[in-house]
Length: 195
Image 1: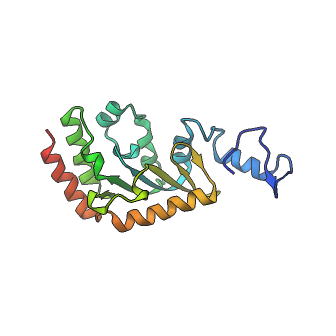
Image 2 (image 1 turned 90 degrees about the vertical axis):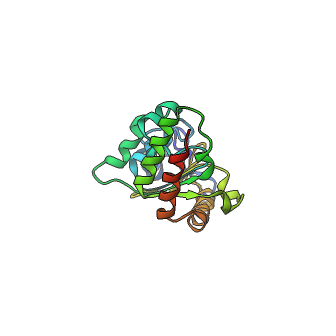
Image 3 (image 1 turned 180 degrees about the vertical axis):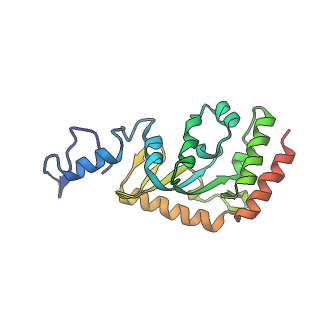
């Protein structure tokens, strides 16, 4: 399902049926971006109506301050998704590892943590939640007004089994993460100790 490049025609019951409406919808849905390429996530974020992002070692790109994004080499324009006329419904999770994995300018990190504390829509997954398989890999789960959901890990996938696995992971994150209020307090507290 995820292969949307021209020349790869859809199949029904393993039989090639030629270019059809499904191929055209996929092409329109992905803005002609290779799902294996670096722009796949950005293109999907622009069309998404729902985004759930979990990051293990950094703050999710859509929430990065300009200074933090510059240090990591993240595209600063990614945040524009949140400023569009009708922004997507977003849910963000950050593993506590990200609060201890910074080795650059402490003032940049302090500013990032303070912004997270003010945001309110970011939940912290604490070390005390354990070492669960769902916590090992960063991912972004996306929902769209047209077409099924997709997940981005290292590439974009619409495969039902892959998406379902990450939907289950989101359910675990929701159970294990701190509340939004407790997360805000944790981000603010950590900001005070950054040296």
